[in-house]
Amino acid sequence: DAGVIQSPRHEVTEMGQEVTLRCKPISGHDYLFWYRQTMMRGLELLIYFNNNVPIDDSGMPEDRFSAKMPNASFSTLKIQPSEPRDSAVYFCASSLPETQETQYFGPGTRLLVL
Amino acid sequence: SQKIEQNSEALNIQEGKTATLTCNYTNYSPAYLQWYRQDPGRGPVFLLLIRENEKEKRKERLKVTFDTTLKQSLFHITASQPADSATYLCALDYAGNNRKLIWGLGTSLAVNP
Image 1 (tube, one colour):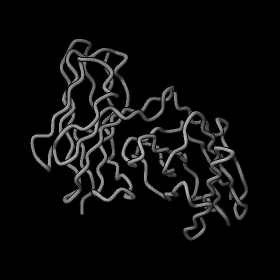
Image 2: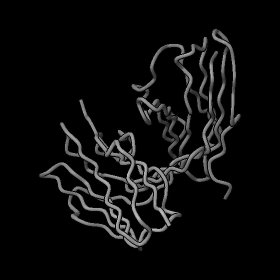
Image 3: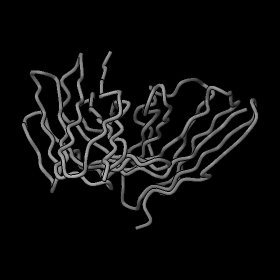
């Protein structure tokens, strides 16, 4: 299996622009997670889905952030408009349905908003 | 609110020694606790999971303990190797379903040959 796939790997944009991050989970994984990682705050859970349905989005920082999962093999995280404080590494992870299963992380998207 | 603390200072040890990393938490009793490894520029990789009713879990050279009274987990790497050099993250489940995890900032480990 190729593992969790994220694109792009790096994104540099200017403040006010729309940013779309993409994720393909591991086939057969029912759960999908979006995280943000910064030096100061570490890894923070933004939102997670189960069977394509958003279960908990309490970590989404503002209305500027939105996430969708139109099917079992694809999810997007969108920031509109982007701000410099959104600069971070964004990770997507997926896991199997059993409770004791761990999360498998993608390589991340490094976002820099100028 | 839930809080997790890991050794903020980097840990430097000699090859062959045992590395011990600490994860302390407050304000909650997690049902699950996990340890991950993260290399520069990459996503975290799962190492071990321990449940609240388990005191200890082992996997090859790795050992995790979970003391719910002290609210502490210890992560040990025995016979450490330079390839073990990485940042190690502790993650706690705070919703009881092992999905909603709160993460420590991680401890950087350097194993010197």
